[in-house]
Length: 197
Image (cartoon, rainbow, N blue to C red; front, side, top):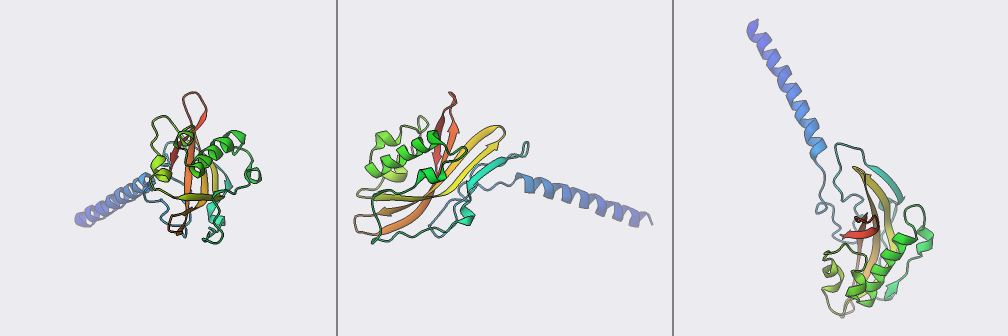
């Protein structure tokens, strides 16, 4: 009888420890930005590149949900260099004149191939030029937004702006893709582009 009681107690304790470990491991796993990156235009853009916190809940306000959208395909026949986004259509809440002007200035710099203008609203020391300026004779067409979200994690706010664009190479080849801009406030409380991924 003692062996049966001891065996039953061992099974119960093992079960409790296993359940406790499972709960902790599910709380600890957060996909990294590498796991969620966009590899081609046929995939849905990520909606979360910031690690979740187990100490405070994440607050989120979404104006455009990428899951509700279909990515467009730009062909050589309908490619046109420039920016073709109606920003007023999306202007609401946190996607205000300040964020729009900084975002628009950055993508205008890409179209104009102007590295200095590109860096104007990036965090100091940010090296994101390689995303758009590493290849020669490439033209860009920015044509739609696919994510607008403001999140707050541990009291820190972040605005995510996803954009769809096409690249035209010198050999007339077209590549359709999407990328996300991440805005956070600097020490002075001004919104800046912290990351482009």
